[in-house]
Length: 294
Image (cartoon, rainbow, N blue to C red):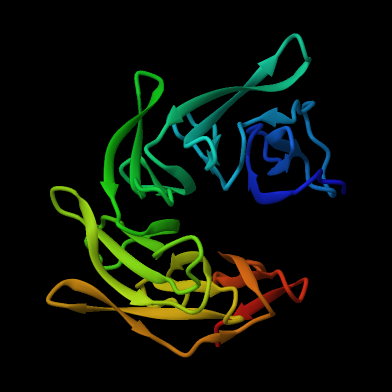
């Protein structure tokens, strides 16, 4: 199916609430970034889908999440170039006779690069700005509007993040990918914890040019593992979490061989057997890798 220029950041979500799946992804050209909606090739949408919907100058990430808690998902787009987070709320548009979207924006101190949903209802957003101001933004919805609830600065560029409960206390820690500068190929995987505020607790080096991070209980032992794609190392790094006096620490395991130039990665149960598979998109070998745990 055609996707448009610069197609990226694909998500699947239950937009219509009728048991069908809607695909959403970003496109980008000289006129800016847009979000496209479409049913999967194997399905027919029960309602016409509008769009594409403009979401600013760029799109570094796309998240599907019920931000306002009304039982219907919204989309959150990261406009890194404009230092703005964009919230897309969907409803029926009588003029278009299709599902339309209202796009709202929240300006951030630096360019948002990725967003994840936390269990407390807020969004954690990694932000990067080579001229300063990088960090992690905590964004909440108050009185129907996005607000910047907290900002934890970082001396390094925050390029991606994931959230997982590493110590079993019921609250998520943040796993943040960072690097010293935009030109630096070396990166770090940082664990951020919250006491009175969010701050870095530890950091470990990753492979060359880290791109994406995911965290989930991949092994089925009840504790999250952390995986990082390293584009120029052509592998995925794997860390297991150990506790020392209740504080999580990361133990590096053997790297996972995948294709060349791994970028985006996801943990999903592809065959519905209750076990997660790792799916990796490889930019240089132009293929996907699927890794199964033994």
